[in-house]
Every structure is written in C-alpha cells, then in structure tokens.
View 1 (cartoon, rainbow, N blue to C red):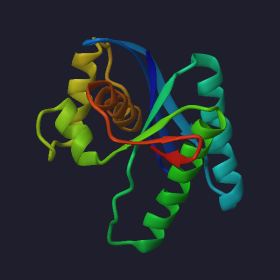
View 2: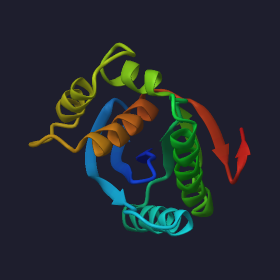
View 3: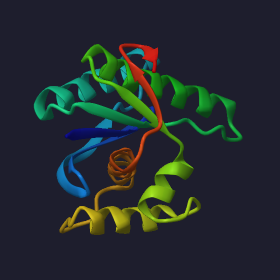
View 4: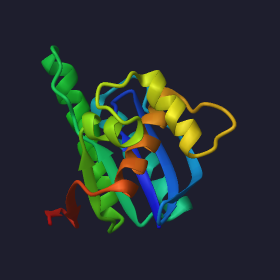
Length: 163
C-alpha cells in the first residue's frame, strides 16, 4: 500500500511517499512544494497543484497529514492551517482517505519518544527507509508521518467526512 505523508507549511510543504507491506517499508519519493512569496491564494494554489502532481505520479492509496500545532504567533498558526486545509483538499479531491497525526504521535512512532529533535527524526527516517542520504527536514517530517500511518491509525476522513 502506498502512503503519502504530508508536512504542511505555507512556504514549504514537505511530502513523502512510502510503500508499506506489513512491517516492510520501502521509500518511493520525497521532496518539497515551495510556494514562494506572494498573494495567499496563489501560494495555496501552488501547494494544491504540487500535491496533485505527486498524487497523480505516484498513486498513493492513503494520505497522512501532520496536525497543526498552535504557536505563539496566531498569524503563523492560521497560515499553517490554511496550508494544511489545502493539502487535505488535494487528497480528498483525488478520492483518497486522509488520516491526521500530531507531531507527538509521529515522533513517538518513528523515534520512540514524542519529544525528539528534528535531527533525530531525520536520522530514524533515513535508517528505517535505508536511505543513502538524509532527506530535508520537511521531507523527513512528511516521510515520518507516512511511517506513523503505516504503524497505526489516526483520525480518518474520506471524501470530506470523518469516519
């Protein structure tokens, strides 16, 4: 089963596709959709179109998205929420079920404890998927989200409805 993991961000949205067969995990692809600067609507369009290309090219059957955390800057939290909503829409428009995971759940599944540093997540993703090099932080977070989904289930949505 191919799983698309998404680490949403307004400037950089990380994505990672893995194949899960029981406990076996195989790396397929990863990277980032960079929306650049400019008008919000155009940036969200870049995210939507970029993720659509990934979905069309790699054919995932399920999508795992990292949940938004609330930080000290409300504007940043709102922007992140908009990017996340766009990522979920890309999946739902493709007819794919979407599951959500907190950063704590993702780190717990990949590293073994929920307060791991980004470098620890990158190192474990590299190890679990037998990668030659380390993925970027955003791509590693997306791959980690996909790995978390392969190991368990979060909140599920199908065609816009919570299951």
